[in-house]
Length: 341
Image 1 (cartoon, one colour):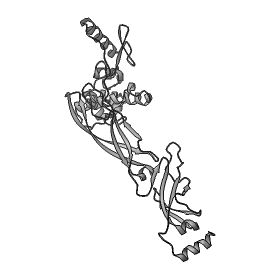
Image 2 (cartoon, helix red, strand yellow):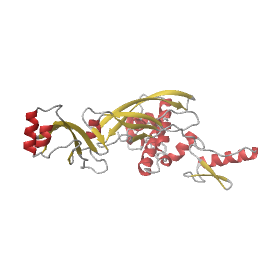
Image 3 (cartoon, rainbow, N blue to C red):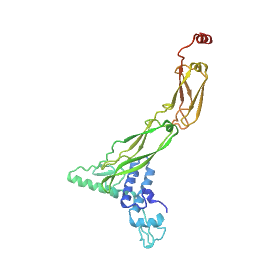
Image 4 (cartoon, one colour):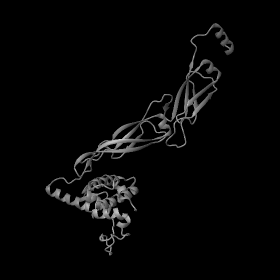
């Protein structure tokens, strides 16, 4: 079967012409290399696949050949009776499909100025489209017609609204071990064919990394609501930390409080037992004399450090000493003898 063009455009096999156009519009704008300057190689590959899939699925004849014989049939590897030759094949019984230039398809679909043009000298120049491209020629023609009428010819980029932020509450356990969150979003997108806003639902996946902190932001570009003549806003999830019954986070460290009796504080017989955030049972023996506010530190039992894989912060145990409300004369005398007071 070769390439699955339906999967490339993310449409069902029964998709109609409008479905195919809508899918191409969304994916072409998302993966156009000019919109992915930090990931150009992957974007160019995907952009070409999307354009090729659209060219095939939007053409009834090509689509019929593809549905029957797959990519191999389209590109002349399987004879098809009466399909007619395209792309220069001399064999009338072979369908030879040569994909068009992805940028030409993009320009033909969107028209002039899908992104921003800027005026240079006496004509328009784009960051991507050269003077020989159809898109450039249309923009230059538009420039001349506007100039002759005395109207400004600037083709400004679409205004992008501020990001839409939403809190993502996470338990301390999730931030310790990491987790996968599925977030179902509902938004409005502009349907170019109908010229109307239509609802769209999508499930976004967020991989919460061990050690992430409150305030960490996860951005999904262009996943906010769309508006006519306006770019879609980015959707940003902001990590929020739920309170924990035992531990309190302090940067990369974890803090916990424990109370001990005066006898335990003086005799060094304290063992602190805890269930860690990843479910382990931890016993921490404390052999020092404990004073009020005393802190015992356990290395590598804090939160994972995101930027230093394999490392963790510290567990800090702070003690409160419970003094007796009263002592009998005999107890006071005994303590003086023992403590040398």
